[in-house]
Image (cartoon, rainbow, N blue to C red):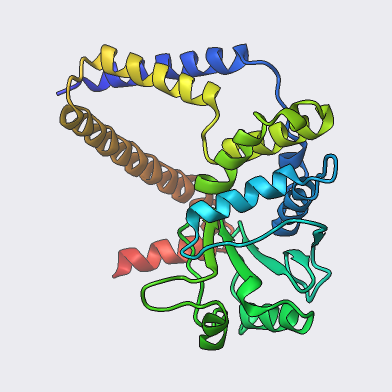
Length: 299
């Protein structure tokens, strides 16, 4: 069993180590985080990146489509020529990538878990069909934070599933993606593209957006390194050679916290009664707290 005094000493040492390591890191400010980017802002960032062209080519959009091919349950036969990308303009679709009479990629961005609207995806599909895009060229990307949010049947209706070729065995042209496992790693690979390395503002924008996502997912390399150092010092100090022993240690910490919290609450209640309630009673008044206290004792 680990001594409680030793645990408190270890906690202080780890806290000091953490503060020293964080202070030693280069100063960092991420304007995307400071601006509190909502779902629309994230969609605009993606559109800004995907529409980049170089010598008539769209390397980022092409790379994105290749990423879709590795995830989708269906073949994706898209030839990028003159794409048009919009945010919230076409029937309020978060991000729409289209070439009339050829293809449409509908991106429904749920990064912060917005609720699905009734017949939402069905309406989007009907809209692009009316633009003259063949059903076989329509793809819907349901983009979530970490893959945990699932699309509802109210949004992805039976009619929408039929249009997208969904079945019990296949998602058809309905593609589930998420920022944690798909977008963040994909953005990292873009920095290796020669065309992007030659575009300082573009590459810095990608770096900034990746940093924004990594911070949210606690995936920054420097933070992981600090976390590993803290873990190593903890294990060395406690001499906990097994996960089971370490878990037992944390159980003791939880018990200690409960005891301290309970004692503190009782102390606060006692002070409240002695210093506040008694003074009010002498003046012939009382508070709701004091009345509750009296009632509980009467019971």
